[in-house]
Image (tube, rainbow, N blue to C red; front, side, top):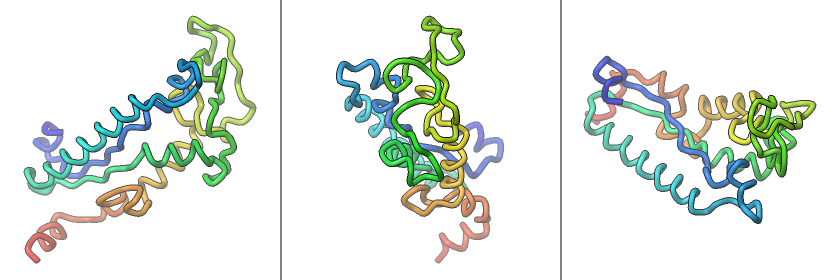
Length: 175
């Protein structure tokens, strides 16, 4: 980020990590198909350090502003209750892959495991493959990042971040 700031960049949008231990590809490798809580702790520690660093940078760099999107929280909500999110129906299985949750990444048949299943409608699924959200899910996440409230994107959502000007910052800090 230092190089971006040195070249004049003052506003940045950034996401937290997803719950790495709950990725379908991780769950399928575990004997009980559950989340790996150690990986989730690592994800959470990363996100706490990221938040601290972003706060520090706002104090250190003149004009630096950011929007941090709570990807971990939002994806977890969608995995647990996909029907609350714009027509998604399946949050615990990939659209393309094989094995439990279609979480063995064989989509396209070009990997070690060549057999794969492909869902009929990717827009019904949160995940396209064991790692990546579908286009429909990414659109929902992007809309939340753009206009979500402070529980989703903070200290600004992207829309607000890019509406704030340097004059607003100076006025806010002198009050």
